[in-house]
Length: 78
Image (tube, rainbow, N blue to C red; front, side, top):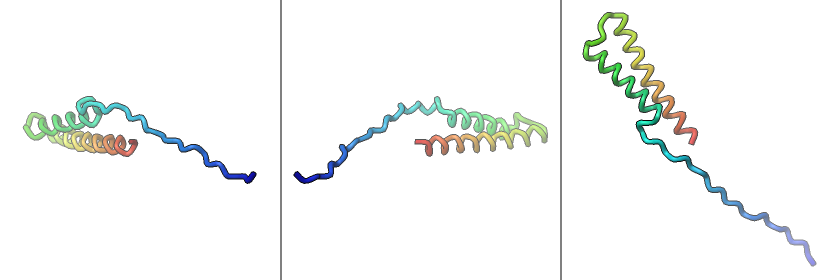
């Protein structure tokens, strides 16, 4: 009898995907809503005063940035 190398069995792994959340339930959506609302208030003139305008502008920019960061983090995690 000759020794034949046995090959290990092939294992097929099927990834388990989690169900996709509806868009309105994601953190990106809510950050974008907050940034858009703040920007709309800023543009409409309802927020007045130099300090308040500066804070509103900075907050809107940061909220948009955080939304993008969260979106990219989630996309790369998949």
